[in-house]
Image (cartoon, rainbow, N blue to C red; front, side, top):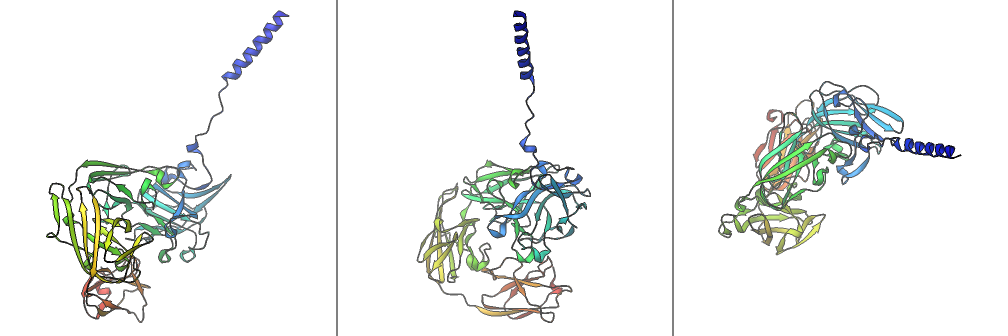
Length: 482
């Protein structure tokens, strides 16, 4: 009995020992899980099968307050020239292949239309290719709400990517980065950034790209803001200085921002001179363009006081004359690239109010404005504007006629400006004109001369700047093509 009991105990110990030595079941790596969604696959993207890193992010419709759009997907990925790729949609165990007959063409943006690829998205296994190796922004849309019907229904656009920076350092214009030769890193060296300003990373062609062409109901962001989120708020820079900036892309699963990182390293101090700042107003009266003409304030050295010449610290004064504000017109003040809203400005002589983050003014009318800002050597610490009644500038009526339109033009647009800025409250390409017997015509009423114009077909073909127009004029469009 004792022997039997011992043997039973030994067997139990052995069983426990064997059991405790069994390896635990493998825990899946959540970064490698292939979830439901859209994917890009193929030799061209170095992902022959469905893998987690090939998944598209859900797209945001910039044209609808950047809201998530059902059926819209986007991804940044390197595509190798001449090699094949396709799309796939996974729903449980079901995998459906998608493709498009890609056409190389101009894509519609709010800036310079880039050359890319467009195609109508449909089920199929036909492989797609691109002509040049590079980083591309792919946007798919299943057109679940019918907004892309006029553009042919479900579609894909594939746009090459080249990053720049836009912000307080360049008056919100564009500074394209230097790309590393063997990877996807963009750098900007010795960038002078004023204190208490901000910026964004932006594709060199514009802030957004439209999927539905001229209808502009569906668009994808082509900029990176806070936390590298497309279309998010600006990246703030509190301390002025000379900075080195680096933006890095890597293939990643998840949202667009998961594939981007940036570095902002201060390399030196900065002594900006406010006497050279672009100060003034941008608003609906000039198409939100940079201040110019009557909307650009002039520095008044005699009224200014520099208390610290080394840091350029002091009080700076700028003058504007004969600025007309229509009833309810929206605007913001500008100073060295910064956009100043109601909370940033102290005003006298008028009542300012907030409207959607912008400023409105009462009573409407024409004003002279004295702007005073205090600069502490790093940033603006106060900004005030004193309004007094002004005299309107003399205006006139000018009719611009365009004839001899280029062959094949189905549309003609007019872009116009004068010393006060853009004459249309529209983005580029401006006002579409009706073509009658091969001619177009537009009359500007109560306009300050001289004006300048550009004719275009809205698809990348345009005239040179036609400037100095003071009276009615007939313009040969073909003869003036750029």
